Length: 371
Image 1: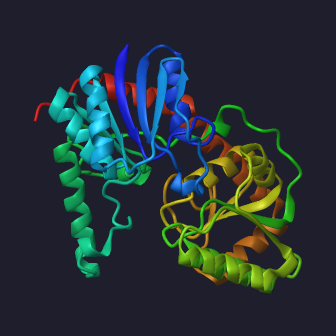
Image 2: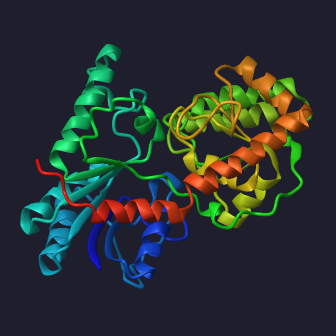
């Protein structure tokens, strides 16, 4: 059995997709995992469990301090010295200080998991590229090499980075880990879809595409007088709040908003929609996967992740094409059915938790590449 110490910004087996995958591996007796996690799930608007938990081969310890703080690192290292792990699994680079401290004290190799490693469109703090846009791609490549140099193995969940020919960053250290979607393993029965309902579920912020959310959905409400919008998710920055305010001001009682809902309620809402809208250029993976699992078409602003224009989604690069795409969905039953079928195929074959668990276990079992 492989002994893993994992560090996560948030970890809830009822909310977080990767938490469900770890629980699966632990229940199968293939992995013993102790997770140190934050007590608050920022991306899900503060929703989360504050208490520690114990499951079969899976212990979850939640800390009320930042995971890169001295207090958190000291506690994590103290545990690791008493219980030396075979791997330190670090979810997101922000938590590398704690992982590196554990490696220094125990010698355990580090396995990093980032959604993106080298995609030229990924977000970076402005100070890293001095606000000079022409330096951003270079800095992204530099950051990727730095991450791979200080870790022993890394997972990336962005398929585009592995579909690109001649990826010189792999060199045996960088592996693909499909982002899991729980709905893939128990597909919902197809429901009657309301062609007049568009849905967005997720936090609303600049990085999640708040400006596109506001621009596209406001234009839809103005153009199509019978369309309704259902929004679920908190605004997590000023751009997010402005987007929500604008959409609700334009739509009035045709717009519903709630800060959160249960997963069953979310799937029921997605499953009854005419389509879901993905406004992020490199985000909204959870919403996309759930829509595919429910047989609900996806309209997105850009090709990323496993989105294939005309096959499992529609891509609208501007407002005019978005309005045209929506009208096509509402009038072309063949297109609607084809997108619904292809979406379900994509998520069930490539993103089922069982598939992710196989990739994760393989990454833990593979011998390390010599430096």
